[in-house]
Image (tube, rainbow, N blue to C red):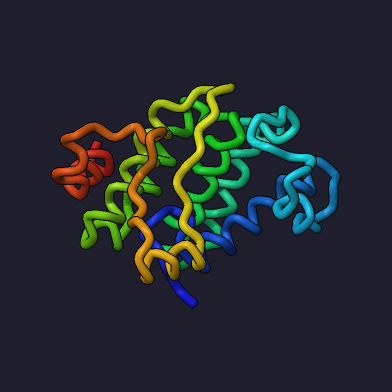
Length: 187
């Protein structure tokens, strides 16, 4: 299907990355790799403030996964997307990004070819990069997501999505997000 939204999880490749990370998290927690019932039910054993999930994303585990992303993903854009999803999941779990990995995550996440050409995509990528900079252990943050059916609903008249109230963007970020991303990758 490709991409249906400019959000970080707005396409098949990020959903593949999401599944890849989940497989490793559940394996680490010795829960097997069948996560369909975990993700789809309201009474899921995991939620964003679950300490088991937060504990899974240790600095060592994040380093291990980031190294695997860089080795596994030969296509540079795929490496960027996998790093974005890993960062997003680490932050959403409440684990945050360790200080010694923040710069590496930001460089990989900000080097998004699509964001260079699309201001809306650049806003989401910049929001993620700012969230990486500001992330701390125990701090929960949810990112806007727009599934395929959300996008279809928008095409028939629903509101367009933009980064939500939890976004860490400033007013100036909306004027020139591509320039802000260039600043992050050149830092």
